[in-house]
Image (cartoon, rainbow, N blue to C red; front, side, top):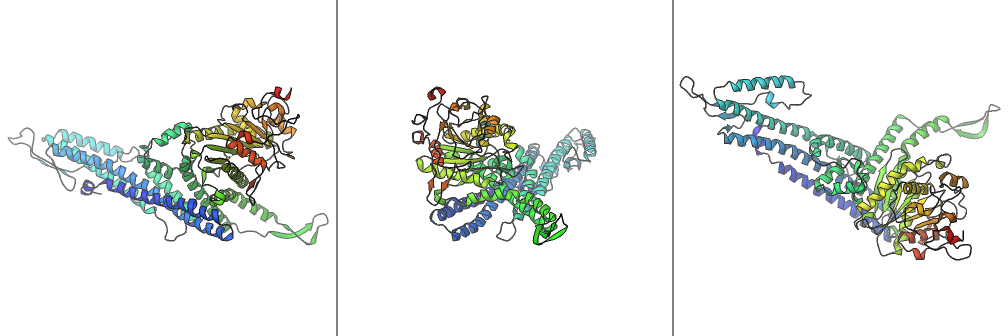
Length: 632
């Protein structure tokens, strides 16, 4: 880039192009939402069968196209705004130098040189002549502290200043200074152009209409490239508060401009998706990008694995090892195949959870099911999956379901479906808005023994759970007035108890199901109002053992939420075993009584909850709390 080009440059034109790409990205986002929330939802609402399932799969591909377009447009928007930011800084420097030249009656020539008039004391009876100066090589230095030529440039510049001080015409030094400033501005603009031209060329899709794994992998690389290039631009955007509370996160987000918000989502979707207190729609957008990129990354790893590790023979002749003879007609799986399958399965494991989440997206509209919001996602460790049915920001009633032992990303399908059943049960019971959330936001115990006997998993979940609940209140548009119910199963009830002990619960009602102990002896210690702790213990639920009570109870041995001394409202159940509390008959569109009671608590219909009778045959009062009510 030269002086004339920079002089005529208008950074606003790049910002205008950025606005155009932002508009295109918004259109792609709207098209994506319309397909999911209207087209697919409408089909699911009125039609069923294999043809609809196939149509939804085809529409999913179209949604992927629009989603990819949205992501790439956001990156282009940020890149163009970053380029405009850097060019404007250079242009401002140039304009200031030119203005100073005009004020001094100097002429800036088309090549960036500066002409100055005669001036100074007469020498041999003549005023020192004017002249023209160009910038020095040292003036064009970036002054980069790691520039190996930096010392040499500094020396040259010092010598040049010294020469200027001894020049007979005082205009010489001023003109040279202006020429150097012009050269530095041109050099700064040239660096911006050279940096962003290749990055912008990368931001284009291939010429097919299929968004493949390679495309999402490319989008992730693009994100890294734009993020590195836009550091100067991003430095001007206020960063989220370090270890901020949900309220602080919410205030930070609201203080950003539209462009700044889009830049944050585009360049750090994983970070934005984790921030409690941000709007559900923002977290959903960010986490869906992470979901798509993660799926692509795993599929590419599987392709590489299959390419480099061909599947070995699966079966071999079975041998009678005692008699050292083959067992006729029988085969056994080879050790080589078992090792190959374990390694491949370890790579593919998160795909189970990703497909479970995608399946929930695809069900929008089915039996009136609302849009799903992905409020948390990570494949790291055992994985994270937080998915809401309906927007919790708009909801009057929010239920957060916390599963127990064995919960993970790869095993999330059943827990996601329990959240769906809670919505299908509770939503028809009220005219207000309801959102139900499956919260797999902690490392649950992998196995019952010995893992589920330990408190460390619950203790490790407390901060994340408390932050999430606080985030729901911070983001809710009703002003933190939403009615929130914590619903927990098995070891999840221990998580709730641990959060209550640390003062991190922040909910209005608590529903326990199949609890092995909630870390306290009495419902009064859980931090909710009297009469707002509820419990279900189904027939045949043997998972709640005496051992479990001792491990996760309070100071009194054998006390869990199903014991009369605990003080919870004991609800009637019509399901059996440890896992049936969320049974729902889809064919008849009818909830079990176990989940219906939970639904009535969610919407605040306490008087219609079916309660277990006391020994005298009367129903347990909703506000029952004191052991004296039992005649003790």
